[in-house]
Structures are given as structure tokens and as C-alpha cells.
Length: 416
Image 1: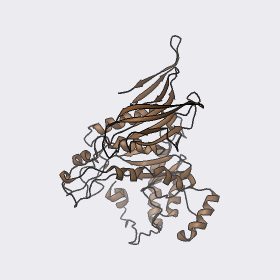
Image 2: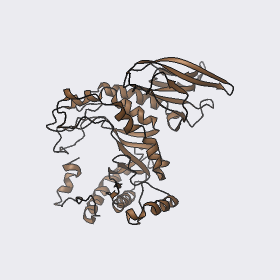
Image 3: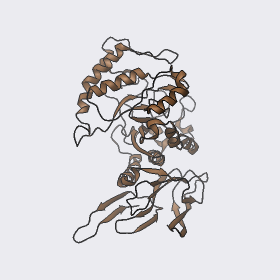
Image 4: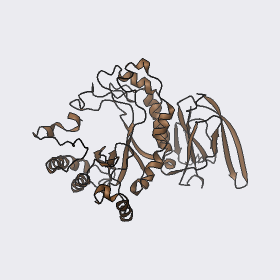
């Protein structure tokens, strides 16, 4: 960003940059919109050439039309339907035909597309609040998610005074995502749970008394992996980690109160160092990609078949909708050790339904240190017929080898 979010070429137009009144209300600005159109007409045709809808090997599968433009909060309308509608129209005129989305500042339900029936219900319920105007929605609903932040500056200046972040804060911020987003209705209830901006670190400012290294230590090596797996548990199938690679400002410093180009205590530091947090996150990404055929569509298990001998270890369980695995639903159990005892060794209890008349109760020992997590695969049959009831070890990687004249099809797994 430049100059607080506005590009320097726009400021160079001798334009009084649009701002909101102190009330939070914003008026549609035709003069500003003309410059938005000018910028889009230069940039978007370039992007359009790389859409997956334009050529088979295209790399653009969607386009973010705005960033954190809130439709309304606490009954106050911040974002303008006219503004969003105008931007989308210009994008389509410039040849963009992939899905469009906004990055809501959090789960606020901004600019969700609805059918006419849903729109009519919304108008009857909330019409007076929005002046009885028809709302405008985007193709996909996306939102930003930050969960744990460092203690506020001025309260505990020295990082030596910081207390460890509390698991309850993390749980409050993550564990209700699926219920809340699906509860918005419209396309938010139907499209993939999409987080265009998932926390990968935190920004820092002058005079805070702590550095990016202090912040990195506060979150810990496993924080981003823990957050990534926790949003997968909520059914998220599309996300982008912000910032995975520190150093985000080009040419100028976007925030006059920030220093360097925003290292962000990211997984890959500003100076190019691949941190331990990146290595840990990579394990989860490889697992999710290896079993993408299972992750692509799952649903939450109402009554999990797995429990633990200590509390707050079994986060939740999902099973696959597709049944390509020998007609069986594969289970994904999301283990996350937030136990108050901070106990690393515990017992996992598995109810395994071998048939309609045979139920086995299996007890397994598991090792998972405090504030660590992994996704346990279960009820999975390999290509050569081997049945995995439940894995108490994380699986890093799976690859499938096709059959040949000498060997049948089989799988190779990488585990600790």
C-alpha cells in the first residue's frame, strides 16, 4: 500500500482524496469512481489474459474486487452498494469473468448474493435499515480472520512482561466460523468457506518497545499450523495466509507508523529466512494437498466416533461426502491440545463400526504436546486393501503410484 491505501499516481492527480464523515457514512463519489475506472481499465485486461476461463493453464481462478469494505456494522452502513456494483460492472467490461469476491474485515456478512426469494425475505426483515433498497452481492463470500494479537502497546511495553496467549481466546475466534458464515444464508451458505486473509503474523509500529522477533516468539513456532488446521476443521477449503512472506510494501512505506516494509513476524521473514513456523505449516499443507480428494467436500460429524482421556484435545470430526474410498466415508479428526493440564500423553478412544452388527471400542495412546495439533486420518482403505481405522500419528505426505506390469497400484506415505 502507499499513502494509507491510495496509490501515488492517484494522489498525483491533485485530488482531494475521498473520506468518510465522522458518522461513518460515505457518499458515492463520481469523481473518485472515474479514477477507479481508469485504473481498472489499465490493470484488469492484463489479469483477464491469465484467467482459467480464458486459457486451460490460466492461473487466475477468482478476483478480489475490494478489501475490507464493510457493508454494515452495528446497523451503520459503511460500504455502498452503488460503489461495489460499479466496480463489478467495470471488471466485467474489462473481460473479468472469474468469480468476484470482497475480503470482509471479519465475519460480518457483507455483500452476499441472494436469490430473489432470499432477497425479498431480507428486504421485509431489514429493508427500513437500508432504505428499502435492493442489496448487491458478489459471487463468493470471503472474510479476513485474525485470532490472537500481541498485547496492546502502552499496557505492557516490554515483551518480557507478556503472558502466553490463552487457548480460550483462540477457540472463541475460530470455533464458530462455520456456524456463523453458513448462518448468513444466500451464497455464504452455499459457496466454499473462503478466508482470503488468514493471519500469518502481526504488524508492528514505532515506540512499541518490542520487535518482530519478540512477536514471533509470542505466537510460537506452531501458531500458523494450528490456525490453518483449525479453519480446515471449520470446513474452510479456500484460504490465503497473510502474510506468509514478510515485506509487503513496494516502493514506499504504506503506513507512516510502521517500520521496514512490514516483516510481520511471518513464516518467511522479510530477509528471506524460512522459519520453523513455515516448516511446521508446510507439513499441514502437504497433508491437505495429498488428501485433497477427501478435503474437497466434507461435513461435520454430529456425534464424533473419537474421544480423549483428557478434555479439549478432540476439536471436532468431519467425514468425506465423496465415497470413492471403497464406498466408505473417510474421517478427519482434528486434534488440538488445549488441555488445562497441559498433558502431552493421553488415550484416544475410537468407536469402530466394522459392520452393522459389530462395534469395536479401541484404545490408543497418543502424544501431542500443549498447543500443538494434527489431523488424524481414519476409516481409510489404501489402494492395496489395507484398512486404517485411526492414525495417532500425523501423516505428512501421500502419493499414489499406478499399477504396472510388475506391481499393483499402491500408496506411499511419509510419517514421523
